[in-house]
Image (cartoon, rainbow, N blue to C red; front, side, top):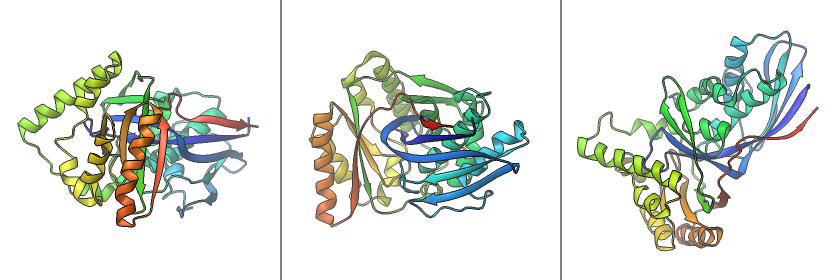
Length: 309
């Protein structure tokens, strides 16, 4: 195999109660990446469409992740990465994670798959680190493993794939403003009060339990963020109003997608998810703020192979 074309999906991280540890994979939102073997060793960035991304291999998230993999697996040939970038950087739906995960997944396939998808996470982290200023796997894990994931330890990359209640549908609204992860992390406090930490632990444990038991009511009660959203909400226009609109329209829960500015909601069934989306969009229409609205079942596969030669 000399070339592979893949779909690298977007993702939602944190899911309100699981800052830096929880995430789930989106289905229709993602990038198209084509990775080809070249005679010259190393990694190069070829054609990039859709967004303005650096073509310097030392600065592009995809090539940095690829070089981390090749450092441990030297080859006599190289790789060119072409990207049709459909996830806007700074959107809060895992743009950098899609690039980094897609690059290492594609190269791994061209090498004969010496690494499992779980093992690829540590290579992809190198790319994620230059994008967000911190190496965290909450977006990368669901892209590579599919579905819901929990990062028990970021240091040892102990990552668990969680069950997926079949009726869950995500609504994501993306206002056309950019909010870089590195900036939204900078406003967070280094410590939190013990009573807030206890509430958050309870919500996180309950959320995981709800996934295993298909308990939609428990899932709804646990999707509350006492630690991060109080600070980040001020960076997103009409965040609380949009979240309340989602909940009043039947969403199980709603919160900031990753570091924002996108806002997500989880609902039981597509019909409710679309009703929720209309209510969220109405808030931004009144602001005359351009936005994109997405509806997605949970993508349990993660990255998808489109073609290979």
